[in-house]
Amino acid sequence: MRRSLFLILSILSFSSCGVSLIRGNPNFYPGPAHKEGYQEQGIVEEVVQPCSVPGPTQRRMIVYLPPDYYKDTTTRYPVFYLLHGARGYETSWIRKGYVYETTDSLFREGLAVPCIVVMPNVNQYNNDKDYEGGRFKGAFESILEVNGRVESAFVNDVVHLTDSLYRTIPDKQHRAIAGLSIGGYQSIWLSANHPDTFDYIGAMSPYMWSLGWPNKEYMHFYTRITSKLRKQFQDPPRQYYLYAGKWDMMRPAVLSYHRFMNRNNYRHSYKKYPGSHDWVNGWIDEYCEMLQAVFKD
Image (cartoon, rainbow, N blue to C red; front, side, top):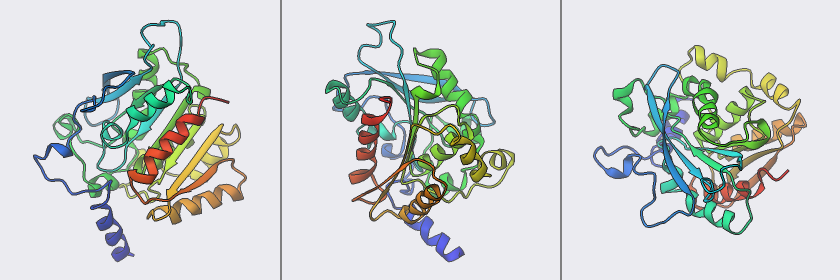
């Protein structure tokens, strides 16, 4: 068992969500909210997010607004929360996931409902010095720190803050949450812990093996999935997406979760993409597919 775990973590350390840190290399830091070489059609804002749990006192989150947000001051918008994976941060979807290009294209062509896209930093940090504006977290560090602390404050620190700052439609029917790898796992549990908050859930190659050191937050947040899902599906989400790549190391675990949901008649969809645990033929396409489907019911 230990040998298998070491092998899995070793693979992760060289995968798209787990490259070992080379300190001083600018490629391993969050970077700007704007993407070099691309002029987004929407409005990009950087928000200082106060933190209500132990760790850094504040973080940065990136908010992408529809192009007409400040022209039409009466329209309210749904919100799509988009989470990164291990060794990621709030700009991962910008730098690697073509989030601006995809969103602009779908809005322009009328293929997606205009919405606010929020990209927070959901890594665990010890304090302000440890955070340092979004310090890079290697795969080993990230995976071993999925302990529920940041996740337990997500609705208060991210969702409620977004609702207070922007013209959102602050109800379950107008919120989506999705993430890749660790972010997909967090999305599953965030929606299960808050069944009245998110109506659209997307788990893209979710890293299904929680390895965080148990603490009181972990025991509250990352346990009792069976009872939490039972409660969540009493008023089922409008859409619940599970994704995995054909060569994805997470596909067996995702497939097992898909079968579990089928046995319990939990309405959802499962789709296998041709790629692996990576952006290409995977997470980029999955976000594009989800964005075209949400908020249309």
